[in-house]
Length: 119
Image (cartoon, rainbow, N blue to C red; front, side, top):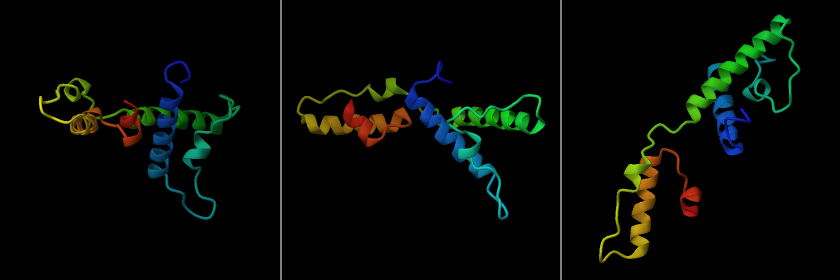
């Protein structure tokens, strides 16, 4: 994942993956099942492919990562549409900026106020 995604993208994928795992596999009983945090650990788990339980963990991790990528990708991304607006001749700059932010929120899929302010 380090090669394909930036640090921020990896964090988004990991968070989405853990949430997805926790929703699909809620803890039951006193011990409960492993949480998303345990399944998608930050440290190398040293699993052995010859061990059946470790192999199951590897399969779960593969499923978790795939699900995380699917969930983390913005659904309605159309940036060309977001930038198709122009400032009206008599429009104040702050009004235009607000309209631009609204379009970014609407068409980019995942723009928070903090990230829009950086644009």
